[in-house]
Image 1 (cartoon, rainbow, N blue to C red):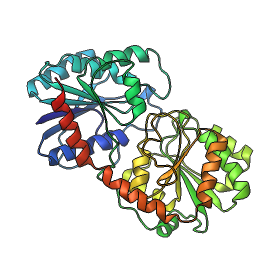
Image 2 (image 1 turned 60 degrees about the vertical axis):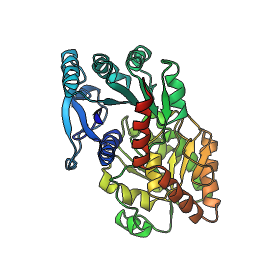
Image 3 (image 1 turned 120 degrees about the vertical axis):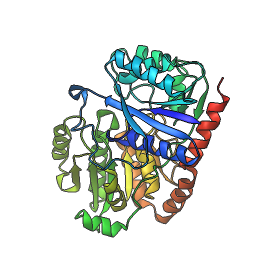
Image 4 (image 1 turned 135 degrees about the vertical axis):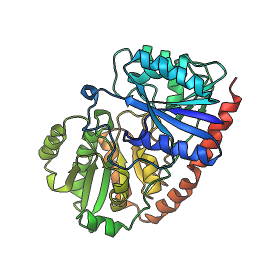
Amino acid sequence: MNIILLGPAYPYRGGISNTNEALCRNLMKEGHKVSIWTFTLQYPSLLFPGKTQYSHSKAPKNLAIERKINSLSPWNWIRVANQIKKAQPDLVLVRYWTPFLALALGTIVRRLNVDIKKIAITDNVHPHENTLFQKQFTHYFCKQFDGFITFSKSVASELDLYVQKPIVLLQHPINDKLPLPSDQLKSQKELALDPSKTYFLFFGLVRKYKGLDLLLKAFSRLLKKHRNTHLLIVGEHYESSQKYRKLVSSLQIEASVTFENRYVPTHELSKWFSASDLVVQPYKTASQSGVTPLSIWFNKPTLVTKVGGLYESVVHKKTGWIVEPTVDGIEKGMEDFLNSKDKEIYKKALQLQQKKLSWSHFCNECIKFSKTLP
């Protein structure tokens, strides 16, 4: 099958770029011809909240990645659609996570021939933070497709508000180019961490909806009872870091909190996850999260809040904890973890879960789904 994937890829950084490249690699392993058409302009610099949109890593080998799409130019959208028609793919896959790109990607797909199957892989339908005209843009985007792949039941439910078209729910696979888990003591030594402490890890971009304020308040309570614990906050801040630092100061927990305010590249993931004991995702809202597959890969249980589809891939008290999105709920879950006796039981359950989250399974289900579409 000849497949074109529209979405972020190298030189753009981030989890969606990484998973698009993994999807491309694994579809190729299954015998398909695949190329990724990514952006010449994804976000204007003025609208991008981070330090850079671009990766500092080397370009992935043996992948056909072409920079084609300008998110702000309607003339470009028409030209890209014409180029896709000329390439005559059997299937076009489009990665969707923000209404900012709905007009660009939706218009490209709208102009394609009816005999080209069109599937949207939807990380989010509703954005985490509300934007102007999001419902109108999302409706325009959704009506252009033959079918949808989602990673959570909550996103599938949101899609039902816009279209009545086939939807398949697949679990988010674990990336195929991740470093191996490393020894915990070795990782702690590399990071100059005290090996006598228990480490909680908040990982990923820091944004308002991710509930870091709830976690800090919960941790400050926990610390009064469990002094030998430490919180690692690892990821670039997409909002002012000062409000969190002020909160840490007001709670008087500075000595027990470490901020690593930067984007962490793939090759550094192992030491942060391996050094930690429990990954905490205290989100206030969510569709799903790419942090959970990382936790599974590095054999770390994860505490998640019961919001959106965030908790759907966590088995309570086997691969992690599912708690209410409150200070009390988060504190209790962290304390339950500290009081659990046999922590090896989580590792065994997580290793079983790894086998279910293969890219091979995801790719086969994706192709199977495409063949059912009219």
